[in-house]
Length: 359
Ligand SMILES: [Fe+2]
Ligand SMILES: [Fe+2]
Image: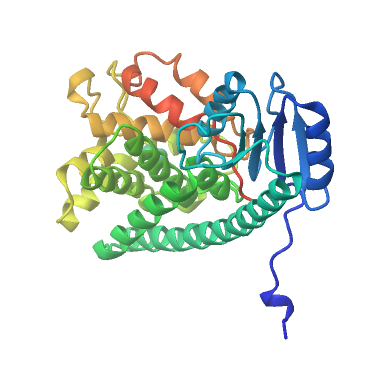
């Protein structure tokens, strides 16, 4: 006997399948059948894909049109799975595609499509559940780290490593856009900001091919970069408006406070302490606290600075709307002199082209 808890979860109301075909009558017939179980967006080969992320796509196109759509679907993070109705040659095997001949019966194509809808929607629900759990667990770890730092207690290195692993696993599995979308469901406080910066570090480090050890160090530096804020009074941290001059002066002490705290604890990489102390330095020497310039600022620091600025711009604040990733990057590329432009040009593509699936 089945209970309500072990039934397949219902399809999300905004979930849809993308059907792209250059055969209008076949497209209409497939679209009508698919619409019995899930919303179907039917397009011609020259149409724009439109907003949102499809749970999967059906591509029924001549080879000359097919590749452009495959590239678009692969550019999403993670890539969109698809059912390709191949004309003639089956083409190269592809990790994200199931290939059937166009000559297959409509019944065979629909039964494959329904099986893919079932797999994709169930796994999307499961991925979202796992993502929520990870975000909650990571937030709990960060809040304990900050509490320990505020009270002068010992930072538990194993918990910090666990937090780092959670961020890396989440970003690897669902992509940076979904990690950020999950964090942004809540008002962005210092914990969400920390997890957002660490997530951007993980996505960026993965994109530029860092080793596992370097990737973990970078994500850990992201988690710790603002630890000094644990020593800033809560009413300043949570102030729902701009800080006055005295409050801003105190806030600007957080890099030194964080670095001092980690140095006193012992056992932290000097590179990570460097990030904590110097993530507000600018290449042109106008940053703080040490007014470092150019090559005096290490690469690890430069990367975290980029992730920090991107996160700050894209987070909701009481006094302004969050910038969209594209808007934030447009602002950042104009701040030549502050951020490393070469690193920024590697960072920007990692943050674009991703539609979150988070429910
Ligand atoms: Fe900071
Ligand atoms: Fe920060």
